[in-house]
Image 1: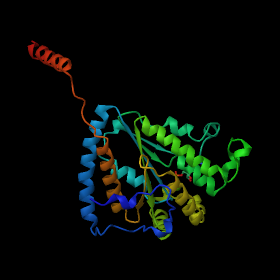
Image 2: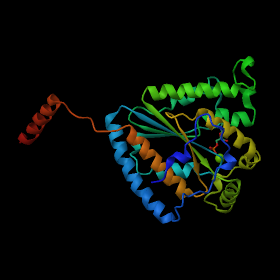
Image 3: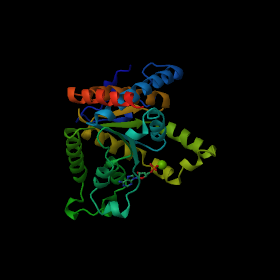
Length: 288
Ligand code: AMP
Ligand code: MG
């Protein structure tokens, strides 16, 4: 087990992402060990999920944010691979449609929230509205009153997001947020692989190169957004992600820890329900 506190973003403390390692593996040297631990963790998560689903009381919302090619898709595929699909929901948020832009930015998020008993996964999220929208100054495309289209908008949105996530927490949905932290060099390597490997070509878009030019602007926007919206009940974790195997292992460990905090358990039947089970059993056994 890693010590996860070091990945937790301290609320309100200025976060300088350039100072945080992208390649740390917490002295764990071997990919093989990490993978066998991940396999164990996936099993444990599946057991916890089965209880969460049966209990039908809490939901978990997992948010993944990152620069392109940081491994969000692979993370979702690997870490969630052992879960029961019936109890999970994955949403990927792209550029908003005109219908989505006709509503507030949390509208599409609200529509995609996991039902109780389920684990919802967001591949990108409402955080894009304080990241890409900020970096590219897209506020003019938005239907918000002109008097709010100024520099104070981001702080206003952090507050809206904090209030929204608090509301979720107080209504039984736990929000966990992961920033997959890669270096600019690692992104370059992965882009080149996408270009060279025909099976990966589809993952590459020319827009990715354009976004890469805004690396520093994204760093700043992420730094401010994460420290302004990390809360004990809706934490952000910065996960070193240059080594995919390490990132996956840490995320699985944090998920297990957080799932356990909800103390999921199979519903217990009362006396009456138990006796009706016995009756049903007798009926079945008496069948000719
Ligand atoms: P991908 O995740 O590579 O499929 O790309 C989805 C794209 O949609 C990314 O470039 C995101 O930045 C963009 N996107 C997601 N949400 C928003 C948003 N609210 N406003 C503008 N662009 C967005
Ligand atoms: Mg992309």
